[in-house]
Image 1 (cartoon, rainbow, N blue to C red):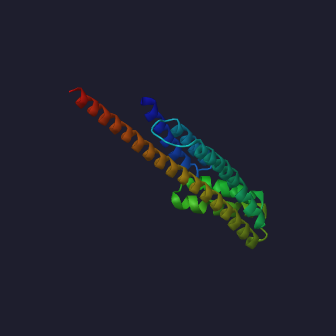
Image 2 (cartoon, rainbow, N blue to C red):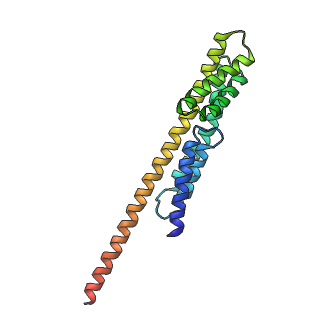
Image 3 (cartoon, one colour):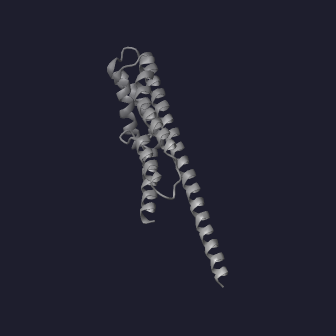
Length: 185
């Protein structure tokens, strides 16, 4: 019973840190959240199938790869450079220290500065590339957030289902014991 509670606590911590990892670039959000599901899987309080765990692993891998591809693809589609993509990432890191608006605006400003450093001769092109990098960042981040939110929902649903099953088992055991005690009298 003690290990089951420890596994649930580890799962909750990994899922929460994984959610923060969806917008903090140094944390691999979806993989951390998946490891939270994996920890929960081994607890007797959680009723989760192996198929669910495998599907979530595939989703975690997909969104992690897509998160790295979207900003680059959207920047290139908008005529931008690697400097715009790097600027977007650096802008996000700086934005983390300035609050929620910094997280949202930081990647755009960073991409714009990156594009201006790369080639400041055409401001319209810099703005277009910065918007492309920003759209790629939002798409990748949004995809990770949705995936991790679904992982959290799966965890809660499986935990509640497992607790209900355990409670029913305990009640069934106590009724059986009561009937056996009455029959002995």
